[in-house]
Image (cartoon, rainbow over all chains, first blue to last red; front, side, top):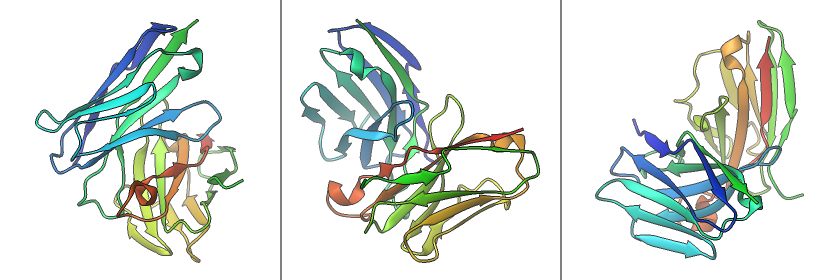
Length: 114
Length: 118
């Protein structure tokens, strides 16, 4: 079945620096790749997503890149702020999974130091 | 409050007890998903409903796990004869549908129920 690997598991950056989180997926049929931010006591929030017909997508300080050939996608956060501190999860979805279940990576705990 | 809600937020059970976890999806959302998240791991799919129909239960780890959504809105995940390995956060997510624009595909997650089995 589909497998998603995420690295690194923890990431510490200084405020204002950039942060990059990388994921690889195994199912070449996967065509939708969301990123979720999970904070203690809150539901996981979708922060950005990308479809397989696009190589890059940007939303203010957040961007995602997708390399379909390498089955690899990355989250880029620029000008990090302390409120960006959270656990981030990448996920992949195959069109052949009924209902669109998401396969998640293991998560990256991002810490932004003021 | 238009988000996904779950109750209880925390549940402590003795091994062997039965538990029931509730999910109230966003009104009008057709699709409902349950995920299990072990400590330090990503969420893992358990089961999927389209309205009241359970179309995929391939992720349920054993026959002790049972989910239902009888009227196509509220869903309950039941775990019988709980074991220590069932300790995890159980997440519910809903979406408008399963195809088309992002607005239909985006899964909105609830805060989860943290289950601890002693």
